[in-house]
Amino acid sequence: MTNKISIKKLGPNQTLLRGPMFDVLFSYEIPVAGFITGDGYFRTKEKFSNTTTKHINKWLKENQAENVDVISQEEIYKILETP
Image (tube, rainbow, N blue to C red):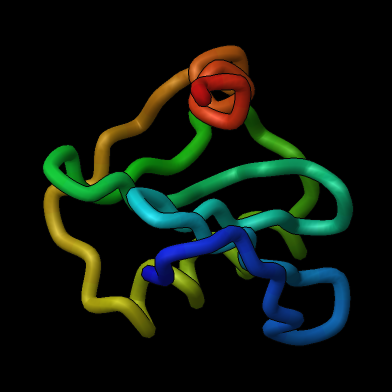
């Protein structure tokens, strides 16, 4: 995490939005997983493409994420709306 908002390209159609208290993984243009300081890792319960599922699983594995919360896509959008 960083003190300001930044965008990091992770690979083809994979982008990480980094903020002071969160990271959010985008697959294509959709936020699908992330990390919130104090809450831990989360992933969408929505089924998108097989490629998006691979993006999520790869990112969570690379970050050694455990006890990942599965949340609705609507909840992920709310995370991004929080100031």
